[in-house]
Amino acid sequence: MAARAYWQGQIRLALVSIPVEVYAATKSGPAIAFHQIHEPTGKRIRYEKVAEGVGPVPNEDIAKGFEVSKGNYVLLEDEEIEAVKIESRKTLELVQFVDSHEIDVFYFDKPYFVVPADDLAEEAYIVLREALRAAKKVAIGQLSVRGREQLVSLKPCGRGIVMEVLRYADEVRTAQSYFREIPDSKPDPELLDLATTLIDKKAAPFKPEVFHDRYVDALKGLIAKKSKAKGKTILEDVEEPEGKRGSNVIDLMAALKKSVGGGGKDVGKSVEPAAKKAPAKKPAAKKTPADKPAATRGRKRA
Image 1 (cartoon, rainbow, N blue to C red):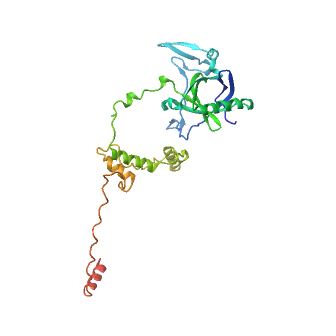
Image 2 (tube, helix red, strand yellow):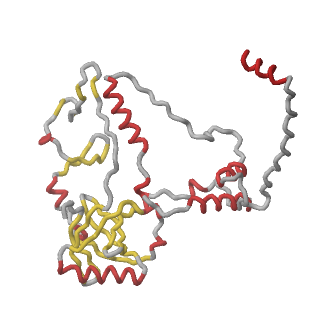
Image 3 (cartoon, rainbow, N blue to C red):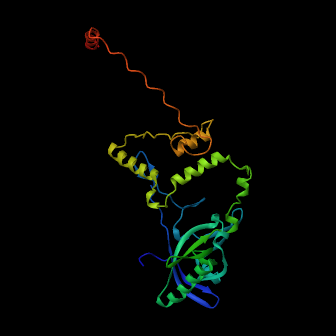
């Protein structure tokens, strides 16, 4: 593969070892990067590594240090850090199998593709994939990569296996502290019916290619205009969406009915029927021939 492997090692299940390679399943999206510029000269601002009381220092004089107390550091060399032995450095040992729904969504961090390292590994790889699929389980293990031991899960995905890096428990905030003040009450049945209808109306298969970063697109457009304007300030007029957050009064029923369409027609039991049309007005009496010239003259004078 052209891509560089994120991790290479072996998956170990009891006495079975499967050589694998792990590749990133995602990539960074489009982004606009800005540099700091010295405006009077147009020169880019650079940063130097400076030691207090010494000034700029070369890279070869820089070491890794851990602060053990205020202003006191333990210095470590790269060889010392590398020499720390972690059993899972090149081995991902599967230590537990759980139902996928047991892992809360907050713990999932980033996905990776796991592929067999060679033809000899394919048979054991396929056995693991199909065993996970048959058991409807997710495998849990830990691997060491780039100076940190990561908690990961493995699950079948089509012909392959996907590894997802999981957050540790101390990296996840408890939801109770944020949701505690929200009432545990049931909504009005009619409001719930309207909201459900709106969800059904907008239900569709997920197509990620339909969505894109509109802010990045707008920035690209602004940069193109700015380059043609030769430094002239360009302020885009942005339309504010309807129903600003600052509104004090929200008629939830009316808003849902309007969102569903047709003023909530055929949705909910208490929806008001459409107002009857007023009877058509009688046509005006025909003007007499004597009146016609006057009307013509009136139009000419207008």
